[in-house]
Image 1 (tube, helix red, strand yellow):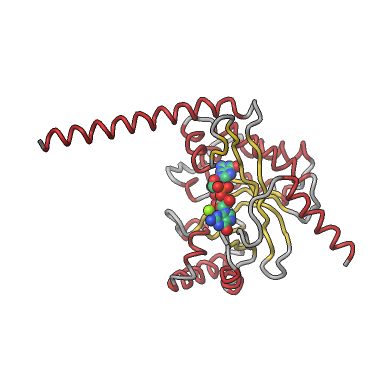
Image 2 (cartoon, rainbow, N blue to C red):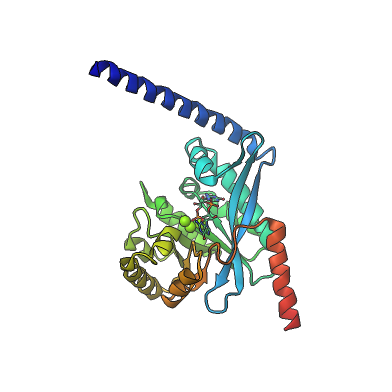
Length: 280
Ligand code: C2E
Ligand code: MG
Ligand code: MG
Ligand code: MG
């Protein structure tokens, strides 16, 4: 009886696994054609200065509009792209597209983009970035590359070398999602990061968990001692904003100041900034 039930469960799980695997293979197949058939686009989330709440730039985030499934979130398709070797090509598209957008905006507007650990291992990455900057005539200091500490997992030393070569191009390098995963203060001491981004889950929990405030306080102090600037991600409420500003965060990102926007809407925001500046 028990044995029979056990087999039933095993069978149920294996067929579910099978379906999951089929789904993954389909996603992978569909991803292969997605660049060529222009199914990706970038959206741009506003970054504001904590002091005056003015726009300082955007984080570019990839979106995949699948012809049948519709919107597939990056947290779903990026792991598939990474495992199937497609991430370098998709990542290169992101770099080019983000530089193209940056070229249309004033020099005080920065554009951040995410780099996958699967791109960091490519010795060609600094060249790819430098060529995209050159083609689009964008100053390196307007582009910021966001990496997570995942880039150091299984590292053989090559990662730090690529990061240093990127840094010497003049692009900024931010350590993303700090406070989740394996976040180690050892990473702050690598001398390649100019910015630390405190993860949104951590920022939002700070309201209900006072011990997070103490942790954030010491992270901020430590980062400042390495002359890094600090961004608070996932700021959704006025309380989140005030707390993070008072804790010393320099840049604020989150739904409170804006969701990721289409290029056109981001552009309107930039134009509004210009109009205000000219009037004032
Ligand atoms: P991330 O780099 O940490 O990006 C921030 C994520 O938090 C984005 O999710 C953004 O939409 C979301 N977010 C921003 N403000 C708030 C807020 O106030 N509340 C909440 N709940 N969420 C907020 P998204 O766009 O779904 O991206 C998820 C992750 O996928 C990114 O996390 C990044 O790791 C990855 N990703 C996105 N675009 C790219 C890309 O072009 N290349 C690579 N390699 N990874 C990307
Ligand atoms: Mg990011
Ligand atoms: Mg992040
Ligand atoms: Mg995050």
